[in-house]
Length: 238
Image (cartoon, rainbow, N blue to C red; front, side):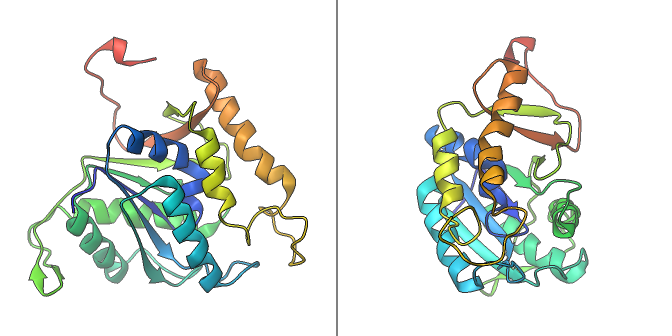
């Protein structure tokens, strides 16, 4: 299966929190989108890896993505090295996405910036013919995504561009809410975390509203880029 977009997150829920509106919008236009989680989020204070897996599956169904896979890297301890790069390269060559969406270049959680670098490097290396990989005992052809974009997470980084997600905000919130063990629930007696408060849940909407304000739309999601943004016409800008 060939994907148009592969959204990659260090942890299950990274993608939903950061770019679910963009994903839902592109799927509505007929694009094939997949999600790749690098870890199982096993160091998360609340819930368990098994619960997180069930929640990730539910979120994937809400968004309507074509595939969702998990590489099972060690939460908190994976590194940007050859072993981890090769595992991501195999996935990139398997699905041959045109666009990669991945973690913020810097953020509060140490895994986010590290995943950003890891995925970016894997995208480049995936296009090199002399790096051999196999999938299900079949040699893979090289493939390099055309575009790599980094979504914005905890920190309010200055976006290089924003995507109007008006009309898809409810779908984004629904996909985030699938992670019941992680986010605000007054009946949950597990320890509080920075993302379990009602304020954090509310922030998903008001941060999107603030980005939308910048372009005159109700809601938007922000991204940073690795190279100059190109448009065919100045009228492509809204």
